[in-house]
Length: 225
Picture 1 (cartoon, rainbow, N blue to C red):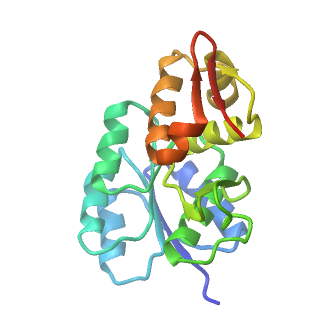
Picture 2: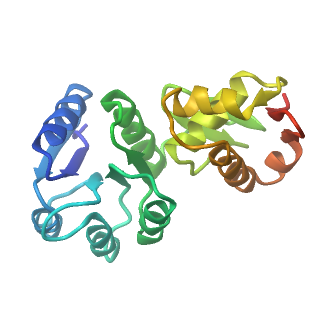
């Protein structure tokens, strides 16, 4: 079977090398670009690209514009990298057609898992028997969640939050506990970050989220088993 080819576009050579090395070690081929123009030229050359990892702030053409150009003729998965995590960046990226958003600094090993999950999802591969069961199923190794057998479109933080709630089903978790578990002890934001992510999770989980993802007023949140 041919190896999947990943386009990595970032003007930081260290990051390009690091991500490329991790992907190659996991069985992928990579092609790299140091700016948006070079990445677009590679894409337009006709080379078969299975997934793109694109930095936002690049010379010549930024990540948003590059994504829009790619989306004119391709629906391949796109992961956007950024040193910032402002809501404006997130919304702009998703509106441009980004599938996943990863904030720097990030774990290369986790990024590879996101690549695996997105390629599996886009190729239409059959999900596991366990995931095909009714209700919520989570594949922590592939960083993918399924609801009634269908993969959920979650950002990395949404997935990590849902996973932590899932692993602690039936327990009430405070906002501080969720912040520390998902964002880390050195996170400088406040508990409203948890609230906004919970709200988005409820929307994406539909009826399941409305009935199972509970707010325990004055305490926090819990996912009912």
